[in-house]
Length: 63
Image 1 (tube, rainbow, N blue to C red):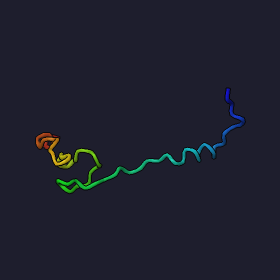
Image 2: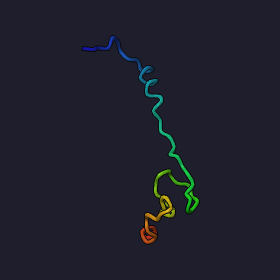
Image 3: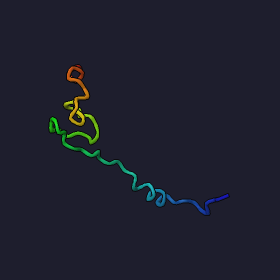
Image 4: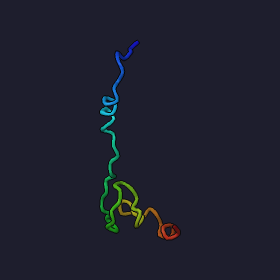
């Protein structure tokens, strides 16, 4: 059975986890309303995705 030979220091542990960080989502311009939106998502402003209206106008105004 594998057993560690010694204690892993705090610095070694922190160094290993140092590369895990939050990144900003990729934003692109909506081709319909020209607002910034996340790629491959329905536009929150106009409700269009891939030149097709996915969210009807009535639903957006009810919010």
